[in-house]
Length: 205
Image (cartoon, rainbow, N blue to C red; front, side, top):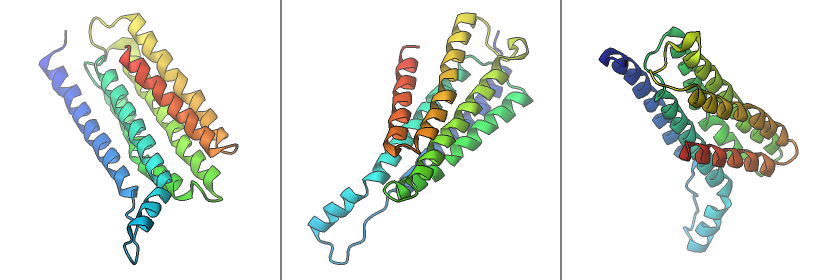
């Protein structure tokens, strides 16, 4: 049975985590730059705005990724009633990766159409490799040691379904990272495909 003390304990962890997610997702918008034109011409401004499309793509994709990470984090906490030191540090590892996302996003937006685009895309996808590792570490911390952190009534089928879902992320993001040296667009396509998978999986859960 979940006690009020348990709810308070996990509530603090989730509230702190929500704040970190909110800050990280807000920082992404800082990479959207306002074009500065001497004459302020409407036609030139439209062209200048269109030239910033890599920044828009990086912003939308990173916003979506952090949103999906937050949804999965929230979903995970519906199974958890208590926390311990291992779980808290594992959660901190995930939040560390979340706060990193705006940086590779900025790098990708800056170098998308420049010679360093492959390295930028690899760094971008590599960040989600770290995120996938962090999610699996957090989930293992939650379900390990006899499931003492889990809420009563959670079935083995539910746990296995979520475990399988998390396993998909790591190899696919590693593939996306390697694909950066073939095509930046392929890396983005793999990432978007994964995000669609996470959304559909969460929607049908």
